[in-house]
Image (cartoon, rainbow, N blue to C red; front, side):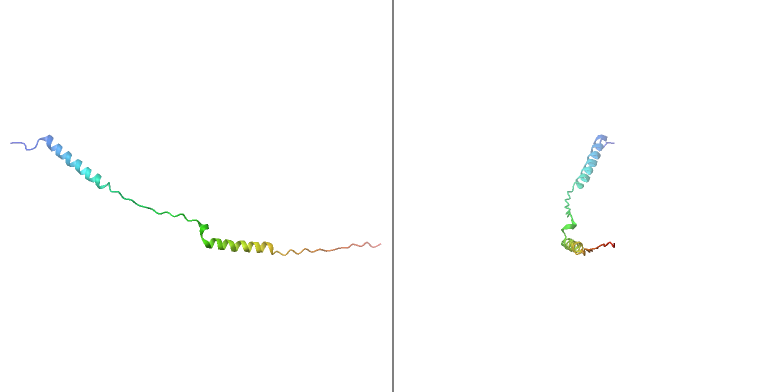
Length: 83
């Protein structure tokens, strides 16, 4: 009986099919995906309510400091010696 394929030819065809399969898998993984991530930095002192509360606290602090009762009691004492 006559051989239809030689052993070397069969190995070559099998290697060709295997390498083609690897190329298909590698090509499928070559998809380019672009993602954009928007990051925003948050700073607490840029909020308007923080400045309003800070101003109110500052005014209250100044009022508390300068409205203290500065009563100075001056007493004149005279001492007499009895002779």
